[in-house]
Image (cartoon, one colour):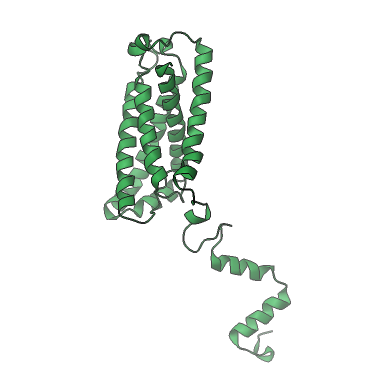
Length: 238
């Protein structure tokens, strides 16, 4: 088994996850800022700056992981930066966030984390995904060109390497983004992640009632309005 190729696949998959997470946070920065402000006063005081720094860091690490699509033999020249800073960042980010998510779970409740969208909440899948990103960074570290000769990565042509790493990385990303939450929390549903008072159809209970009233014929709306105000027909304004 080519451990360097396997490490590149894991790191690229983790990179795809970070690109997805960072892009959502940057596109929906006000919503992510609101999620951060729910994590106590200390976090709320720096929510605005963190809402910029965290997605930028995730995008930078994700882009760094994409350099692993190139075989190790093509990453030895000066035009490309070394991959180890991005891999080290993935390891640190994954470990730190896994620890923070574990603390949140230990305190009880399912506070929103805003990892992938504004309704994403802390759960066992959050810890496992963060640890998987750390392992991906560790695997990417093994693809350093200095150690490539020891692991025998010279057998694949460059195009085959790139296609294999890209396909494997996408599979890893799908598992971490979609499969892992379903396996870690079998009872998890989309409706369970929505805020209180909001239905799975995207409206609140009050909003759904108002929408239902608007769909009624005008005569029924007027009749309901009169009954609600306990007024007779003569007391209604023209």
